[in-house]
Amino acid sequence: MGTAFWMALILILTAFFILSWRVYTWIKEEKIMIYDIGALLDIGKRQVQANAYGFKQEKDRLMAILSAGEGKEYTGKVAALTTVRTFTKLYNRYDNNQSSRYFFDRAFETANMNVLNALRGENGRAYAACLMLRGNLLSYAIMGHINIYIFRRKELILLSKGQIMEELIKEKVNKGLLSKEAARRISDTDRAYNCIGRDDYMKPLMPKEEIRLKKKDMVVIMTAGVEKNISVRELEIIISRKHSCNGTAKEIIETIKKKNNEDLDNLGLIIIGI
Image (cartoon, rainbow, N blue to C red):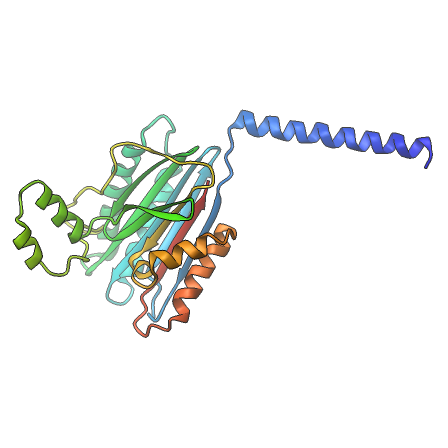
């Protein structure tokens, strides 16, 4: 090998390192955080897919919304799609100087109004969970029955079951507003007590403070259709296999479908890796 070859090799390596350094500097200056995102819907045994999801990402920020609709014929589908479109449209005008709570309050209330207008008196509703990531800081809001978990060190940590009767009853018992005996007599505790698409609007569930995530954490949002058809242990085993988030979501849905539940509801799932 002659001098020309070695000179060409040195020039190529030098150019490669300069380019790599510029990309690193650009990412650092722009504070871009690349999240691994996996999302999947499945119709289950239903005739209409009434779940929907959406994402918006800008630099070190991410907004994700998962919605599950309920109602006869296409009313659930309309409610869920209207909810997701409302959130993504409003996020396009979101000012980073505003708090996430301000966005959640405005988005849920606007979605409620839009769903009522879209359904025009038809009986339909939607449940939704929206999260915002600012670097590794997580904030979220839930209306209705959708679960949010953090997966950390091979363990799923439940953040919230959403606004379901079970959680409302626990809160009232803890505050002394309801006796334990009365709580035991209340049935259907898995039913949601709030939704998008009601005349008497009620605010979503929101934590008071942001949650600081750790490197390699994963955020898992699932509809009731997923939660009812797979155990937490099964989820932990699948997520621990370290696929991409999209691959993990596919394996979870396929595991549920292999159980061949004849009454399988729509399935909706979002997984985000930090």
